[in-house]
Image 1 (cartoon, rainbow, N blue to C red):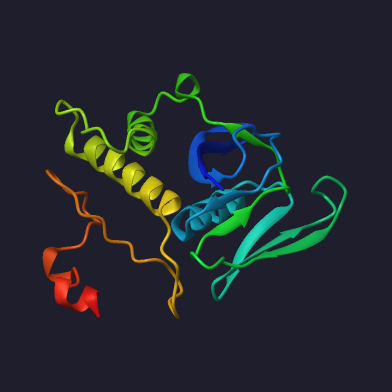
Image 2 (tube, rainbow, N blue to C red):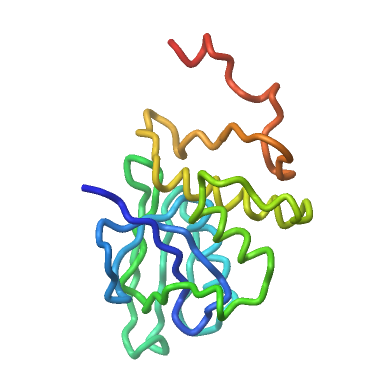
Length: 185
């Protein structure tokens, strides 16, 4: 089944875009989206900053959501474990909203989303290094979520992405990339 790329926010918090996928081409707002480990960590960190009665914590590779009765009047615990691709299916606990460039003036977040949505186009050569790095992170996140690797004894997918031009600070050096001979084994 085809996967559709979504850029969503937690409804009411339109400035934090999360890149995920769904098998659905439309959303009800409470759908489950598949996110990379990196995005799941960001969702948990953002949720914990908002004192709404719902918190997130990590237990090894499992993401544990705990809601008090102050959260919508219903206490619950939900444990989200990574799937075979190392992705986290998160949804149904709050309404998602579709991220809108019109609601977010931050140039870095806008470049991040453009990188995710236009993965095969080059970044704008007029962008600063920091904005170009945000674009590259969005591109990388979209590649990871759309083209997952089946895990074999690993906790997360291989995160290296070959890039051209300026590389963001968190990008691997060429010395850390696996040699072609090792990949063929």
